[in-house]
Length: 389
Image (tube, rainbow, N blue to C red; front, side, top):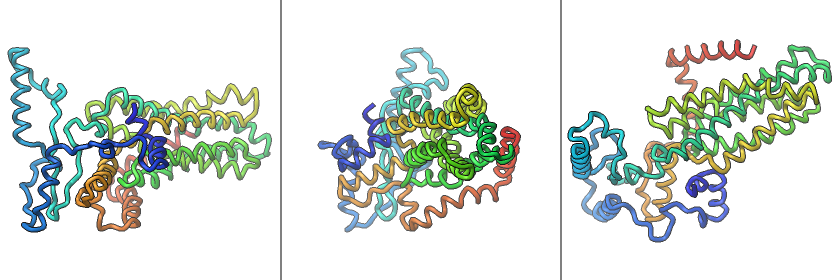
């Protein structure tokens, strides 16, 4: 639980305020020692300047390789244990059993850069190795986050009649409060989702900052003094509530394997589709008895607890971002600038503006160049038009 709070936005804020004195990572604690393969690579760097770098044989299938002898010994031991217990090895069963922790041998590039990866095959910082309870908790927060944002779209419909009576607008104009909200969370992912894919930013900061703005904007929305102001605020609500609608599934994919991901996706998609369906029901009981603003009050009441839950229990799930931060800690620990993550190696010759521009253009580029993606987007747009009509 301590590592969950440490990696959550609140924990990161505490670390920043205390200059990393509290909630430290293993690399920041006294007595930390690198795994043996990593220490061997670090010790070998002393001869690189004199003898030149000799690149080891390239890996056969992945960027991280495990010592061949350890892997072979582990396979033999697993097979012998299985045969002793059952008399005959069961096909495929060995893949379902938890394997022994195996150190990962870091790779070096031609210029001597050490590629920062997971320390072990069951590294605790790898989201795929998190406990089931931790992953379920994070997935629940993401699903509730998605549910609240989607609910806030249709919850407005119960207020239309009261809004028309107070400001004397037509039904067409009054329905703009729903249309502009949907427009906002349609445009938002084109900006926020690409930013969450940049390793130097990550997913958690995008979620936290935009949800904070969503809660803040929801307050003046509920007390808007005129129709025009309400419409602008409804658009901004949808805009800042949008990241979870496009990146929520990506966060689940960061944590779950391909075998378990469909189950997590079912929960997330259910939250997304139940939100607009239940929104009018949740506000329909209060608006006739109180006022049309109660639907907007409920949006504030629902989103505020979710934002607090995100502060305490929504850590970074993006593997490249986690490894980039580990590389930064290793450089500080060892004083050696050769420790770099894969994302840093890929982007070290790029300007910040180029990285951001590349990320922002990529969604539109994929849409234009891939007919399958374009078809799905047009189909989804038609379904949304029917769904909210």
